[in-house]
Image (cartoon, rainbow, N blue to C red):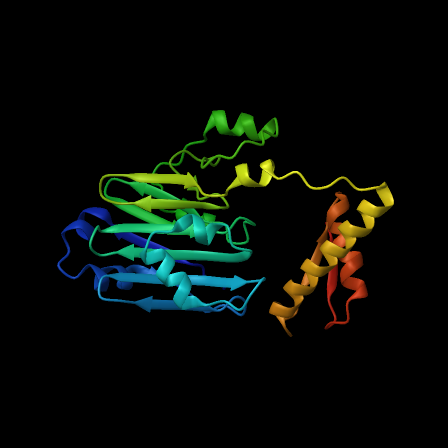
Length: 253
């Protein structure tokens, strides 16, 4: 059975513990992973752990840990990378968990009376909710395909740490906030293309380059693509077919 990232601890005890680093490490589970590999670093007053892979440059875990220690969450969140990062500051007794913008690591949490449970497994967090109730409002939003970003799930008191966000947890608060610099992206106006053909050619080149960067990082690990009803998944599968790599599968549901 696959192991998931998992944390369960008592927030009251965390705030009072004389050896908070030892306590947190005893409650944290970061399983081995083929890709990306896990890491765990400790310092005099912090623990940083999780998974991280950069597609634009060689990942420097020391730099990522330093950014977490300095609480420069936005600098990390806007990298071209996939990650799930856990950081504990023993001085402030604050736990911070950061997800990458592509959503490769789904992360759920439940804050009960003095209890915090966080996991990449929805089921494991669901088990910690004593009396699960359906969130009617969020269910209706889901049925009507509402697209706004939310930390709610279909279960009351079970929340989602959505992509490109950081969650802060202490005895006194649980706060989730977005980190992506969408304003800078939307403010950038690229030059107009001379024709639809020119745009299509440039788009395919960009997508081909991105796929190549990802395949380079994956190396010899077996992978597959999932073909849905959308155009993008079929296009990616087509480009994968052109790329010399290990045998792979295309799955259609």
